[in-house]
Length: 224
Image (tube, rainbow, N blue to C red; front, side, top):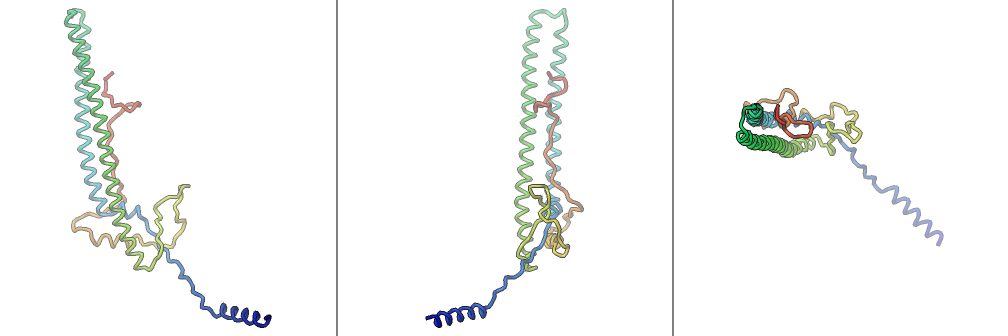
C-alpha cells in the first residue's frame, strides 16, 4: 500500500512538472488626451462658431428687453415728478397714482421676462453643449479604439482627467505610448475641405448672462 501511494505521488509530481506553463501576455498600455482631442476637433470649432453666433443674438435680445425695462422706469420717474406738482388736482393725482401702479406692474413683468429669457437661454445653450460633447466623445472613443487596436494595445488611459484628489490618473508616461496625435490625424482624415482646424484648445462658450441683483432678480437702473 505504501509503495502504491508513493508511486502515485511520484507520478503526480512528474505530471505537474511536465505540464506546460501558459504565460499571460504582458499588458500593452497606451495614453491619450481626450480633452485635447475634443477641444481641437474640427467639429468643435464649427460648434463653437455656431454657439458664439447664437450667444450674440441672445445678448442682443437681452439688451432690447433691458432697454424696454429702462424705458418703463424712465416713464415711471416722469410720473413721480409730475405727481410732486402742488397745483395738481386731487382727481388728477388719483388718476396718476393709478397709472403709476400699472407702470410698476409693467416693470415687474418685464423683469420676469428678462429672467425667464436669461434662464431659458442658459439652459438651451448648456444642453446643446452637453448633447454635442456626448455625441462627439462617442465618435472620438471609436477612433481611439481603432488606433489602440492597430497598436495591439489592450488598455487605454486618459491623461486629461483628474482623480478625487485633483491629480491626473497618469503620473508619468513615456511619450512613445501617447497616441493623441495619431488619433487626431485619423480624425482629420474625415475633415471636410475648407473646415478650419483649431490652432489651440477652444472650449465651448458659456451662456450669456444679463446684469442681476444679489437676490438673483433682474433690476433696471432706477427701478425701485
